[in-house]
Image 1 (cartoon, helix red, strand yellow):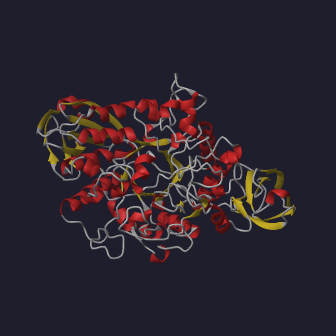
Image 2: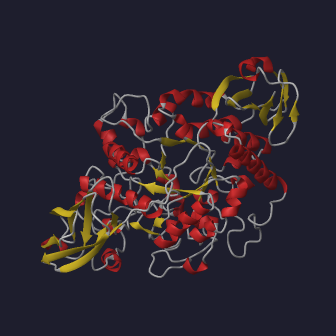
Image 3: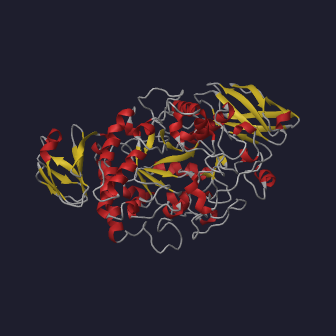
Length: 629
C-alpha cells in the first residue's frame, strides 16, 4: 500500500480526524448505532481454537456489554486450565487466559461468567487438520498472479449487495465503488491461470472491509475473523483454498499488521485507549523508514514513523501492547490453521512495531515452518530494503528481521528505469542483484513489474511491445519467485493518477462485458503478449534451471545485459539489447558459461542461435536461449 495522500485524495476520503475518543472522524457520527448493530450478545476472539498447537497458551478476548464486572469460570475439562483473567478500561471486555496441554482432546469448553453479567458460552476446541496439501509454502518454481478480487471476476451476483453493509452499492462506472468481483469469480477461472503458467494466486485482502467508501481494496479491515461478505463467507474461503490446492494452485493471503479500518469493531468500542496510537491531534506517519536505523536519527522521527497513522481512516494499532500483539498473532495463526493457505504477503511491513515484527515472525515460523512469507518494504535502496528481511546485518535499535522474503522493489525500480527511456540505464538492475549479498537468502524475494499502487508496466515503458517482452523475460528468469499483476499479460495499461485507473475490471470477468479474455484470445499485440508470457512461464515450469539454477551476471556493456541460469544439466543464456540499435556482441566474453556449448535455441520464438561467439541482437530485444552442445 502506498502513501495515502495519493491513495485516497482523489476519492475525497482524506476525512478530518475527530478529537473524540469514540468517533473515527468528525461529522455526523453514527458510532453508537454502528456498535449496537455490530455487537452480538457475546463474542470471543479467536472464534475457536485447536488442540495440539505448539504454543499451549490461548488468550481469549471476551466482548459483551458489562462483561468486565463478571468473573470467568471454566468447567472441568481434561488438559485445559484457566490461568488468569484481566479487566480492561472498557466495561465491555474481559481477557481470559487458558493453557491447553498437548494431551487435551477436541471438544466444547464450558465457560461461564458470574457476577455483574451472568452468561454461559460453549467454546470449541478442534482437531488440527493433517492434510499434506495444506500450507505448502512457495519456492522459486512458483509464479504468483496478483489480483484485486472486486475487479477480477464476478462469480456470484447474489453477494454483490449485502444488506447492512456500509457501502452496499455496486457501481462499475465508479472507480471507488464496489464492482462485484468475488471468490467464486476467481475460482471460475483456475484454468486461465494454469494456461498462463501461474501456480499461485495472491488476492488483495479478502477480510471484511465494512467502510463507507473505497472499501474494495481491502486494506482497512473491520473484522479480523470474517471474510468480506461481498466476496463470500468464511466457509466459502476455506473451500476456495481447498479447490485451488486440488487444481494444483496455491493461495497467498494478503494481510495488514500495522493498521485497521476506522470502522473496526475494536476501534468503535475500544477495549482500552492504549490499543491504538493516539496524539493530541491527528498525526500521520512521516513515511520515512530510514528513521528506524539512522545512527544519527531523532527519537521523534522514529516514533512518528512507527506510531503515526497511515491515514485518517486507518488507525495505527499499538502492537507494543502485549494484549494487542497476541490478538494479532493469534488471528493470523487462526487463518492458516482454518484454511491451509500457503503464504502471507504482509502489507506496510516496516510501519509496525519492530519488536512485534520479530515476535510475529517467530510465532508464525515456529507453528508453520512451511508457510511462505514475504513483505512489502517500499524502500529506495538495496540496503534499506534488505534491513527488513533476514540479512547479514547486525541488529539496529534491538531489531533483527526474521522475515524470510520481500517484494523486490529494487528489481521493480531497476527494470522500470532501464526500459522507460530510450537506451535506459542497465546498471541499476545489475546493482540490484549485486546487492543480494546483504540477504541471508535473496532467492526468497518476489520480483515484480508493477502492482495495484503503481502505474501499469506497459504504460510506464511507453507501450513499447519489444520492451514489454524484455521486462517479462527478466521477470521470469531472474532469481526469486516472480509476481505478475492481473491484466499485464493482456497489456492492460494506465497511470496511477488516481489509483482506480490501474485497478480496472478484467475484460470478461463481469456479466455483460463485450470483451472476454477468458474465453477468447485477445487480438493483436494483447494476444501476442499473453502467448509470450504463457510460453515463457510454462517453459520455466518445465525447466527447473530457471528457478533453482545458479545465476551468473556480466556487467552491462554497450547497452546489452547478459546473465545465465545454469545447473549441472542445463544452461540458459538471457541476453537483452536495451538500445534502439542492433548490437553485435562478442560472445567470447561469456566463455566461462558457454564453453562446451556450440549453439542454442531461443525458447519463445524457437529460432536457432548457431554461433555463440558472434551474436547480433536486434534493437529492444531479449533472448532466452537454451544452450545446446
